[in-house]
Length: 460
Image (cartoon, rainbow, N blue to C red; front, side, top):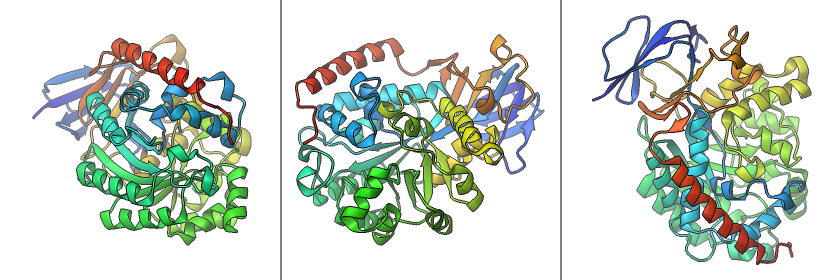
């Protein structure tokens, strides 16, 4: 049994039901949960003096593609929209190996942790024909080594070019193969207990890369095994036109026909929903992972987040893949989301605090978690701390709840604590050698990009 005392915090932004901000108080942690928040203090195995610091609940990422960490900032794709962007990158992603998946997960999740993220959901759907059987296992290994709370998905693609889909046939799998591995991963890794560190989600990639049969069978398996469902939806007009042409239905109507709506389902992006569709999402409690940076970079559009929140659609925040974001930084996503919706919706936009809620309580609900997302007695001890006594925060102390959106944080945090353990201290990861991992990862990046250049980079 271990204990930790975080004392004298300048402000504790609890995100509890009363939206309390506590000044000059303490947090006492026993093992992996918060036991007490208040003015009293007790002896503890580890004491952190938080004078001059703001303390926040850990951020929760609801959509990522960690493998894409190795293909960010590529000049040939920077001005592309989604479909041509994907077609170009598929040729590079054919070269994924278990080692690349492991190190890209280390880099992507490590960066998330350095910027206050304590729970990461990843959507991995690229499985080359050879040597991809252990990809998700390698992700779980990386998460355990880093100490991050991890929700992995068994993503999939089953509709290749020869069947009218977007991805190359070399990157698609059969329905039977996908379902068999999905069941294996659930049986081996899924833990739905309170404070669990690892869970599994089933996540066929998108309407333009999977068959209807796969979507139906995946939903059946997920509900039989009591795990959640996830896919991309309503991200671009190209996707909408594809669904209308192939299925004679708009994307959400197509999902509804496959039994892919409900409180156990959330979609990435959700930009191009009409009013009737937004009301269906609200009525069925089907969620949306908002990815503002990616949506801007790929020129996909602006999700109707103010209207979603007004209607009660469950919404979380996400960084999306590193190749469509060029980073794994949820703090950056909070400020981007705040400014984007201020520009687009003026006085109807969410406040900085509202966006923080999306990145914490909102994201926790999307993942089906009631044990994370706020700082309260009995909740998991997941939090991060920023030092606010430096020059860049002069005059910014008046609203700790909104600071992450209005002022922003542009450097790694002072502390990230996950499950009661310090995993980032003074902006550095505690459980790995960052320099060694970076060197190994960069070597693999060069090999992946070089092999991709040798293949034909054009969609046929």
